[in-house]
Image (cartoon, rainbow, N blue to C red; front, side, top):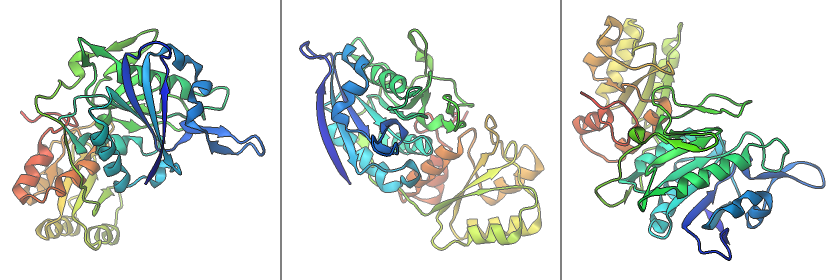
Length: 357
């Protein structure tokens, strides 16, 4: 992947108070209308101050890395997540914070993946984007970008206020691995039904310190591998053996996120249980998550989930599908024992799920 670099001192001629690395991967936020045919094209980030003149009020040294060419977030894959983690690793000691501009469709997946790849993160990594291109009159891009930069540079007593991977969108700062895209037509695109916002942006940005991860005691550790041979099976009434068999028998499958009903419940058809049991015996790791936006898996509470627990399906507590999938990729890439894999998947690693009692 190729990145174009632009250095901008928004504080000039004043002395900058913070340094931010802005990484543009693609998406609506960086698009403007072509003067000839009104089609949307990426804009030149060396002109970002002209597009967002409010940035002159910041006292920051801003470096922009723009992916060349930009990609639609629907095309984001494991290699992009690993590259972003490596970019942060290489530049970690040069900047006070990081802002990643990203398409909204897969932003929650990317933020979740980065949270697992960046262990002991002590600086803000803020994802943001837009529903309306920055070149349009009613765009939300300028507000999202300005607030994300402000949050990324926010400090108290020399320490970052938000030392974790987050998504800022519209008026809320959400933990990245707790976020889900819920809107495609309105500005409040992201929601975190199972964890409160880390901050609310109104006239002022009001942080919620009790919800934010504490600063790490150990130095940053960046991982470079994710296991991509995973899948998602969403259960539905009337699901057939052919559908379940096709997914569980996918060539090379290593792990599966099983989206179940309610508190982790699933059909008790003998064929269904036999297929799952056979998959577990073949070494496929199955992680049970609830389809409910604010639900929580409690395997064994009902008879329809007790069978899953008994056969070795792992309960995912209140983890989201986006976080479950990327966590499964991360844990399986560690190549540890079956027992250790299950332990890590049930352990709260980056604030992505409720801690086990």
